[in-house]
Amino acid sequence: MELKLHTVSRDKVLYEAHALYANGTVTVKKGSRINIHLSTGYKPTATIQKLRDDSSVVDDDGVLLKDIPFESLSTAASFVTGRTANGMIVWKTENGRYVRYALQESASEGEKHG
Image 1: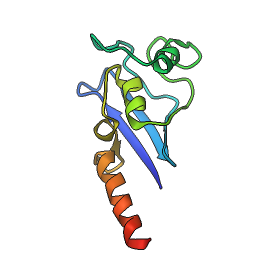
Image 2: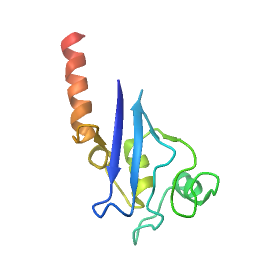
Image 3: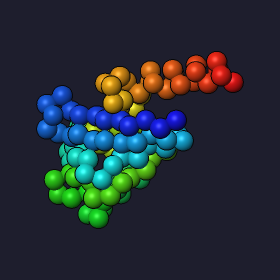
């Protein structure tokens, strides 16, 4: 299963990202904009911090210069939002539904066909 995902900050200014979810990997797409400011008290993982600090990955405005794969929806969401985040509710599908529901539907469809 492959899902096109999207997330945007409430103010539509801090971040806006597009991603592709396939085979358990979520790839945040080149051209996405991440929140360049970390939330107070948020301590990113070493991997997230390294990516955020790499000028070949993220420009000064927070725009991704290349596709970045993650093994977790939540890690990808934290990378984009600059805070602790639940990827199941941060990411939405093309039709605006939380990715959690799309994955649940896919699992139940698999059970019906399996």
